[in-house]
Amino acid sequence: MMRSGHRFNLAGLGLLLIANLAAAEVTGQQRAEAAGQRLIGTLAPRAEFRTIDGQTIDLASLYGKKAVYLKFWATWCTPCREQMPHFEQVYQSAGADLAVIAIDVGFNDSVDEVQKYRRKLGITMPIVFDDGSLGAAFHVRVTPQHIVIGRDGRILYVGHLADARLDQALLAARAPSARAAASSKSAGPVAKDSAAIGVGDSLPAQTLPTLDGKSFALKGDRADKATVIVFLSPWCESYLATTRPAISASCRQAREQVGTLSGDPHVRWIGIASGLWANADELREYQATNKVRFPLTLDESGSLFRAFRVTDVPTVLVADANGKIKQRVNMDDPDGLRKALVGL
Image (cartoon, rainbow, N blue to C red; front, side, top):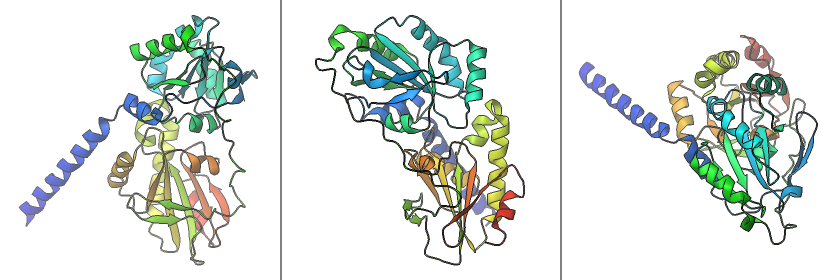
């Protein structure tokens, strides 16, 4: 029996290694291209936004006149840093027929961090700090993610790498033949999110699909159970250990707190994972590796993060048995979640 069990464990380990390798094969370029498939050839959305320096940019006013290059990035992102010299060079040599705009995705980041990053690297292009609406409109799934819009206002290219394909797309976007015959045409405006759901509000009557093929009603019908919503990212602990060690430690501490308390039968638990740099297989791997005992769902488009105005992980919300959100828990407090659950 001992040997048989050992062989079973080895087989299980082999399957886990195969799954890990399969997940690792999904590159940033593949993720960006998959996310951008439905965008290529479509009219780019209209959007007006302000840079971190107060400049107003109206994308719709550029369509039909200039090509547009949007780069979605983050200060904690290693390939973003590696590609920044290329990005700066494109901006410096753009000329009058190309608008170049940097858009921080606004995930586990801040304007202060962006300002420090800009000074350290000496970058000069306009920078926007996204509230999530631009990322949603352009199907951002990785950092960096390049969006190239032709002078006809149509999306020409979506990618991740600063390579020959990106350079060719930038040339094609600026070509005279790409000028719109009717520049007034454009897609609809970027959708604005409704009012934020926060402390004091009721959970929405929304049912979420979970990784195990079941469903989870945010507003449960059990009047004797509180609800805990854990917003997370499966790579927070590992990837941010070097670029944002404090956030990495906070994610680990939150996971440990939740893991200790999630067996409480008087509480309903749901984990909502960001779709940035994560797919369902990677979330399953996270669940198995960390022995997560409660249901998880992947917020691929980021709609739930935006609805609850969550821009950082870990973020934990606690709602009472009536579905009213009572607290946004400070997960830096090693006993914060337990104290939040007392009396619910």
